[in-house]
Image (tube, rainbow, N blue to C red; front, side, top):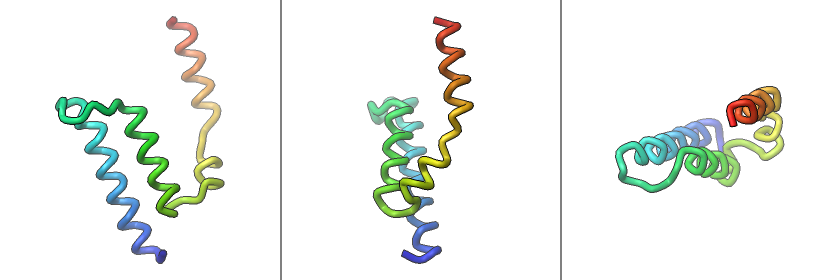
Length: 75
């Protein structure tokens, strides 16, 4: 897949993910935000837009720990 095809596929996946996330607000689709985001990420990897290794390296663990700590404090 060349660069332009990857950009086109990535843009289409972004639009699909955005519609799924906003579709819940409009009561069109029953999919929640985390599930829609996960579906978008899986589609990016499955279509070859991004490699699993690159996706794994893109995870910011400091942010995840911060969010976990905030959830534990507020619970």
